[in-house]
Length: 257
Image (cartoon, rainbow, N blue to C red):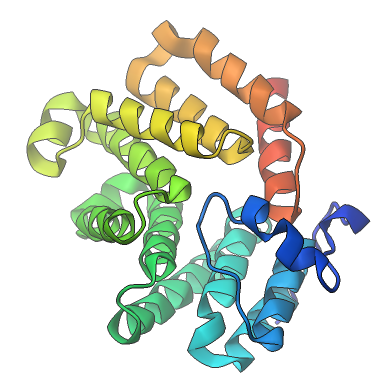
């Protein structure tokens, strides 16, 4: 299949040789992925950070389960931001979720096997409609996987963001009462999770974008000013790789609307 090109190629997102390990802690502050010793797995991550998502998926899958996180993150980010064909997008996200489930059986203590499972199912749910996804029981799976990721790695800022966004999405779609009783979704919890994520990863554009989206979903016009401030802060973030650049562009698009 043909992968769409990353629209903002930049030499700053290429991490040759030792540069990958030197910048690893900052690049993976959100997902706490450990630095891989295997040079082939490092290559998959290099392609991911540079925005060559198709190459990252192929290289990651060629390494087997040790590089599933690189392949899965590349496929999920590509599907979410760059794939315009809805059927192809959903297919990629389902494949990611299935690989994560394999991984969960073999590597149950890998936080990103759980986080990326939730991420893929969450984006898939948005693609088919959150209400439909909740009816199919996907909400429970997403919440379970994010909770598991945070049990393994409490400092996983991206999982905190996703869980905060989950509370907001559910409340937005089914209301405070049903959201609370049926899905355990609460405005205060959503808010606290997103605040905690920002403290852990203060340079993150996506934490701010998701927080802004959540405020609008949970509180409407009452928090619009806060949401606009967060979008502006996200747009001003300096991206370190392709995914962060895509997040910054999303923030800029929100401000332009």
